[in-house]
Length: 134
Image (cartoon, rainbow, N blue to C red; front, side, top):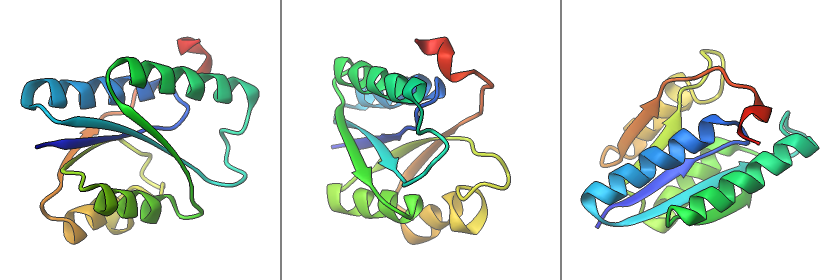
């Protein structure tokens, strides 16, 4: 059975990630999990982003997903631990800027190296403002 994880941040692109995860589960059966890793003092700590994250959690639940919010100082390690603990078989990620922690060997490439069984879907970035989904 497929266990699909959509990793979201409070950005409008989160809806696309949830939709892609839902599409995979709808075609193949399985479970959809939606994960947000909250890191202390991050750039998304605003009232507006909190409302968007709440909306994304509600939207993901409506799509049949199980929503998870975890505190973690190292986002990548927290996601990798979640994947192992939950037996995730596919992950949906948004494309990151070239200088972010999700690029290169420390990010997506480490998922491929450490978890070669993992099906990875990366959606290209869309430039949207946080407020567009509200």
